[in-house]
Image (cartoon, rainbow, N blue to C red):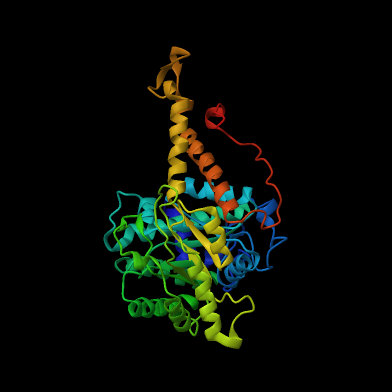
Length: 435
């Protein structure tokens, strides 16, 4: 435990630890992004060992991408007509399922934590006064993502989700960690953060976002801001009774955001509202209006005149609340500049459904430690080993994410080809179930 804390302090704080890292190639020089495998001597072969991908900009590499590499990745998505799945995670198991799905689909992915998910990652028994548990949990999750993203050989944007005004101390704590990490490693711990002040007056929303963008852009971080309200309920935030007009952003408002943030930095995205709703609803109950996005792009391009980009899509949009949406609406929105779509409700269900299917299949082997249909003395350990039901949850989630990658046209992006079958896979007690 003490050794683990020393490693954490070395990487994040850089305090009194130079002797430990002075002989390590990449971490000893400020300005070179940290390679976790190289830092700790982890095995790094095949995709893990490559410096760039066949079909991506040269700056995009395996592992967490920040700064210009992240911008190049997002630009590539906009230019090539796909959006990157952004999946909320609450455990290392969920993170691994996301990484597995991304490699399977030969694609990048965004892994993100909410404040509640971060607290859960740290442990619900920890005191969360001043968001201490949520900060520690998110930082812990960040190191897991950084370590394993390299191993899976895919680029990952490491993000945090909705941060309302009352939650700003949580993001402040994470920015403190990223600034310390940057001072030591030359890049931030996280790639980006979302500030969601959509329930505040627009002037206050933009004003606070300007302050955060100024701070974040100094260390190569991207700001995602929300304009207009996403309906439904997620992570304890309930907007089910919000006024209908607040579910749809206006082109003039989106231009106001663009006009005020761009002089500070172009490292921002906009989660504009076009009828989005968190949660899952019956088909037809979600009334999306993707054309709001293209009208905004045209309005801003007209305002920019000769300074408008060649594609007439100056804004990178984010799609929140996609559950229950028609694929046609999703893909139409991608055509209007959506480069990221959040996924939470569907993967929550897929994870649980995997466990449910496992229990249903092996129900009679899960009623006690001893005794099953094969005999009263037969042990059931290999059935109730938590790795078994968790793996069932992961594989079911990977299958659900396959559909997400396809819907977002985010398949065969990197140029790595099909993933090789894993070798020497150890299963519980050498007799694990084929789940």
